[in-house]
Length: 463
Image (cartoon, rainbow, N blue to C red; front, side, top):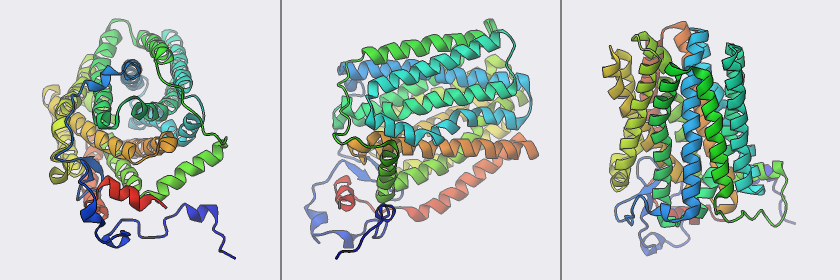
């Protein structure tokens, strides 16, 4: 009679977490595999494009109508996200000067993505993904409409604003995993890197345009009009999703319960060494990088900036990310040597130091542009790494867990650095975040992986 294995125990790897040469069934396996353009970069253990990868046009994914519609919806949806973030954060500084309350605006927007991410990903794998995404956009539109009504009647309080930011975050939590799961189905594998870069470009184009539009409307009409515009743009995104020529998602032939689907996703994440490395590094990086974003409204006020200047500073951060997106296709070939993530930590610490000592908006803007560029490069590398190791049937759940690691880091970091700023000062909190990021980098270097191809890692993960 064979041994019985508990379902929980089955989720944990029974061998060493990191592959070694002894795990290969054939001693010549390393030599027999053809080189793959997608490799694990030595030193930080994440699959990225290496030299020799096919070089496709960045715009080639737009040839597919499904991706075009989805990208336009993503563009519109992210425009509302950045406009909401700018307007809510600035409105909070008008309601209270407490660093904790201001930092909680960032945390309230990201916390639902951490708490609800896995459930959202499981539902996206079990239900019609396009309808699910459209419902998420409708929810975001409803929250924006409520914000517009309350703001127009001067009925917003710090608590009410935080609650509605939390509800807006619920919509984002529903949206992200299903969008991430749809993209690989709409483009060829060789175009996945270009598609992800275009998605990152959409986020950061709106990161530039969103604050500018929000700043103009804030100065002209006030926050109520910005929230109303967000409601309209969310409806536009929902219509684009509904009309997109996307093939219906085929749910599993055997209906799986929500809790079991969530357990399956967690089980896969536990048994995938590459995905575990991605999740760990994502949490660590964003927990410290979010300090500059969360405390930026107070940094701006500290140099005497008004609403227009604050939004221009956010636009500078987005502009840096856009420039990085255009340069990103050239970075992968150097990924193994330059170690994008390790370099990104150092550069983001440098940007944070620059922001702390900047005496004016003109000197603060370059530091924020560098921060935005680093944010995009690190996020794009991590996202592509997660996408490439996830099977189709678990992709939404896997991306939801990846989202949870990022948003959990952002939410925890925003609250932590807000509390530090409350008890010390904003500058002290930012300096501490930069120092901690470097210390964490030295710690995470101990988890680096040896260089392996994706084919090898797939063989290691298969039963």
